Length: 309
Ligand code: G3H
Ligand code: 13P
Ligand code: ZN
Image 1 (spheres, helix red, strand yellow):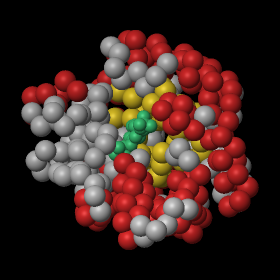
Image 2 (cartoon, rainbow, N blue to C red):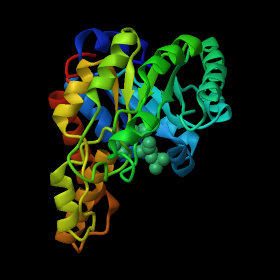
Image 3 (spheres, rainbow, N blue to C red):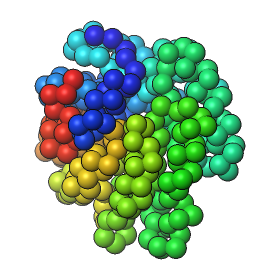
């Protein structure tokens, strides 16, 4: 039981067409729900922390909570920085003991993205830390529909091959139609699997990463709306599309929105049904259980990583 990199997890996943869940964390109940699920399913696990999560929970708390999770469960956990925006934050996380960092240079032109990624790779590799980079821009709901806009924002397969070769990055996040948050598609969900297949053929040994991969489970959206929430029209990536992506080289599937929805739905429900309660443990406990059940479902029925630890 230790902090581990994702190297072995991805090598195994790449061979067997399943994906490792990478779950965003920012407090104790979320961490406990996820690690209890991974333990129950005997699944490999990546916990990831965004810049916003670091700011909210403060770095020392998150590090110690994940360390506590390792001690408590006996699991190996990869602790990953999600969407590091510059060299400095990646360096800080490497120095703090993260085992994986993402440098997200996707907003920069190709050559600048390469230069920034290389700088992070050099620093991180020297300390035994692995690096994820991103090429292509994740779609927003307003711009993911028009077919002619796709080639401008989605990952170009030839560029992806050149990018990996020149940066030495360990894994690559690609843009094929997903987006962050609870409103991923206006019309029918669409992912560019042809493009994904081309990328994975050109990069057969590079683990690919799917951001914005929450399913936005209808049951949680319905619960939120039933108990005072207002999130109409929320839509995510259908589960069968995630399963397909795992067959084309996607080894890491990023999930945050589904955790937020599960937690919020359960808290909303509990508070409406028990207006007399005001002990946070009363509603955070069920919220933690809802997260555990949801993550177990993902591991078992969507990612295929059950029993792969
Ligand atoms: O990629 C985005 C993740 O869901 C993290 O979101 O920046 O609000 O913590 P955040
Ligand atoms: P979701 O918003 O679909 O959960 O995506 C999370 C993510 O990509 C974190 O990097
Ligand atoms: Zn992301």
